[in-house]
Length: 302
Image (cartoon, rainbow, N blue to C red; front, side, top):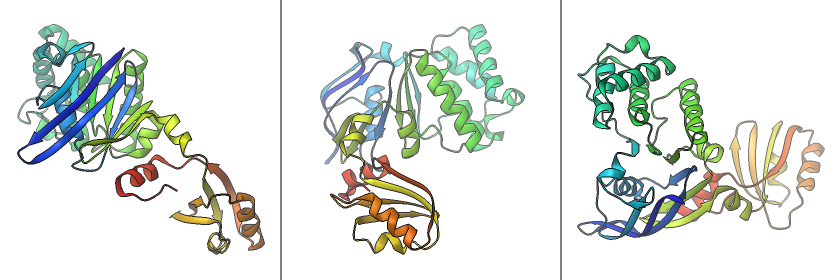
């Protein structure tokens, strides 16, 4: 069963159509990436799933039933903009938010303390939210999202403000929650996180679904047309072969999109002839970032 199903959903604001005839299904227990450029309609779509907004057309089902107040209580929503009461103390705040989701004061306190310990915030339980750093506030908001153990999580840019250590911690918890049966909708601009975590994606542009499906199948459909090369020396060997359509430079690493029919071994030979020291030479599918750019801006991936 799909945890979330949208069918022909449209939402307008005056003359602006923010979401246009959007249909998609999100499988139970999956991590699903909802992607798109700024202003594409992602947040509007998430708010309709949350029933914060009502669609003008179409239908939305959540956890097997039409969206309603009862489905809202089964969703954990982490918005891109923080929604915390900054004057409240951290533990008091989490206890209050847990109660809003139906937890008793005792149970909300117990769960909040456990999460604060796990996210290394136990020493801040009696501090006001405003006294915490942005990263700490993001972790508090994450706890507020999961404290009632919802079967569906909607996470809009969950890694905002987090350093690499804490981003990894939140990522590991997300995957743990998926293993426990939660469905996760992840909206982010960090394509590397999507590639590593998501089972399926939907890319929205100008309110429309432009790419949707199993992430592995989408990448495989492009074929292995990209060379990832790590080397030291002059990069002229790539430009002089006539076998490369486009090169993305990342310092000592480059990603080069091959022309149709090009033999990558010829590029390797060209590198060795110019005494370039090659430590990595790999033929790969195009990165999701390039597929994103192609679908949004019309630039072929590679």
